[in-house]
Structures are given as C-alpha cells and as structure tokens.
Image 1 (cartoon, rainbow, N blue to C red):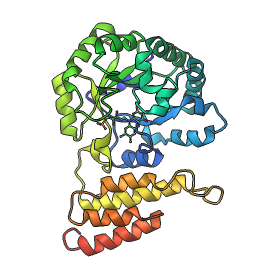
Image 2: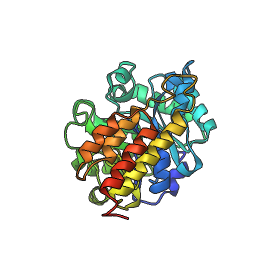
Image 3: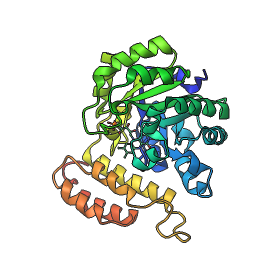
Image 4: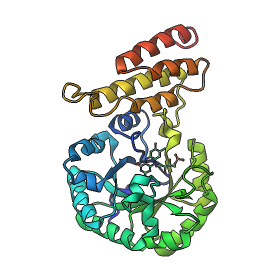
Length: 331
Ligand SMILES: Cc1cc2nc3c(=O)[nH]c(=O)nc-3n(C[C@H](O)[C@H](O)[C@H](O)COP(=O)(O)O)c2cc1C
C-alpha cells in the first residue's frame, strides 16, 4: 500500500471536502492563507474529459499552489483504462494523492456508470482502483463513497474497497438515495471503524456529513474512533474554519472582497478571447450568500451583491456598506 503523505498526518485529521464549483483554485488559496485544513481536495474532474479535446478547460480545476499541500486530485469515471492514463497525468502534475469519487448521485455522472453507480458494480470499482494504482505507482490512492445505494450496505460494500489496500477511505454517511436530505448516519461510524480494523487497519478513515463546526467534528471523531473528518458545506464563507478563529463580520466581508478579486484574477484573465472568462462569475454568487449572513441588513446586502457582474462592483458595494454600518462599531 502506498501511503505517501497520509502516514505523516497527525490525528484527528480535518479535511476539506471536494466540491464542484466551490473548491476551485481561488477558494483553496483563501483557505491556504486564513486556515489550512490538513488536506486540500480539488473539485472532481471527469477522466473522460481529461482525455478529450476539451481537457484544457478541465485542467483549470487542477491548478494549485505549493501552499495547498498536501493536495489530492479527485476524479470520476467508469473506464479503468482511462483511470490508468489520467492517474499517470496526475502524478506528473505533482499532486500528493488521487481520490476516486464513488458517491456522486448526479444523474449525468451515474449515467456513465460513474460516481454512486459504482456502489452497484463492485467488480468495476475494484478494477478502477487497480488501474489507478498502476497509472500512478508513486501516489497514494483513496476513495470517497457513501454507506450504500438505496440502503445501508456497509457490511458488503466497505470490505470491497478495503480489500484493495487504500491509503484512505472517506465515507459520506448517507446512502445515494438519501442525497443530502436526511441527517448523516453518524451512528454507523463506529461499525465502519470495526470493518476497517478487520480488513485494512492501515487505511485512514474519514467521516463526512453535516459537520458545521470544528467542535462538532471533534465530537464525532471522539465518539466514533474514526481517524478524521471531512467538512463540506460547513466551510462555505469561512476560510478561517480550520484555524478555529471566529472572524468579525467586517473581517468576513473584507475577506469576501479578497476572494472575489482573486477569483477574477485567476479565472477572468482571458476575457478578450472568451466572453465571460474561463469560469462564470455566477459561481461566486453562492459564496456571497455564505459570507453575507448573521447580521442586520445581511439580506439587503446579499440582494445587491447578487446583481453584480465583476469584482470592482462587489468592492464598491461592500465598502459602502461597511463604511455606513461598521465604522462606529469596529475599527
Ligand atoms: C456544491 C457541492 C458540490 C459537491 N461536489 C463534490 C465533488 O466534486 N466530489 C465529491 O466527492 N463530493 C462532492 N460533494 C459532496 C461533498 O463533498 C460532501 O460529501 C457533502 O456535501 C456532505 O458533506 P457536508 O455535510 O459536510 O457538506 C459536493 C457537495 C456540494 C454541496
């Protein structure tokens, strides 16, 4: 088993969840600056896409800086030979690890036989892991999955994965059919730890689902004996999340402006060539919602920000708001 950076981490491990159209290069750089997780994850990227003519656009999702190490590239797909080729590409790009998505419920992803559809196809899942390891013999390989497809299948599905000697396994504690609609089944975490100890004690196990504060994450780790936690929605709008620092409203809003300016610098640089730049500005709008919350007039400010088209407009609106609302309260 290739463990790479995983064996150097101190437990409990706190990881950033991979999130499409969220954990892009700009988002990750903000966290590298204000509060680093123990591991960064990219957004998931299609192996088929990475081998197609359109790969340049997808490689943007693999941009990273040295400050983001250790960083894991996440991929999805259904053809082992494509995983082998892309794994070699990821190794060449200098990533610290490769993670394979086996939990995404998106229809388009599942239609290809990828993501959560692999829970129904354990033989193919194994072939994909083996092909990935062949393609990147120097990198640790991990999996992110769910507890089952339409019901709890941990007893049959988790051993299928653990038998492949993974460096790490992340379990989103819901079934595919539960999407994100019910509370995560943290009560199963302890049983999964037992399975891990039986089949692959060396594999690092991360739990995921509904962790919105560091304290909650720590509590779940203590209760279940899991090696660490992966946090997704809980980190939106809070690059300090992993540091434990609680920012003031002014700090958060100032940070949002920095984030949107970085987003524009990174992703709008070829405006001349391509209308709208290389990533759509609308991606920033879900971040506005997360940054602008929890204070009087937040809604009013959010509405104004939703109408913006670029970072300069965001700066003006935010600074005007801050100067009229916060000058007296916070220097
Ligand atoms: C906007 C969004 C995008 C996501 N994209 C991915 C992805 O690319 N790969 C992946 O494995 N999971 C993805 N997920 C799932 C999260 O990684 C995580 O498993 C899920 O949000 C549950 O964790 P949470 O309750 O901490 O948010 C995504 C979730 C959200 C909300």
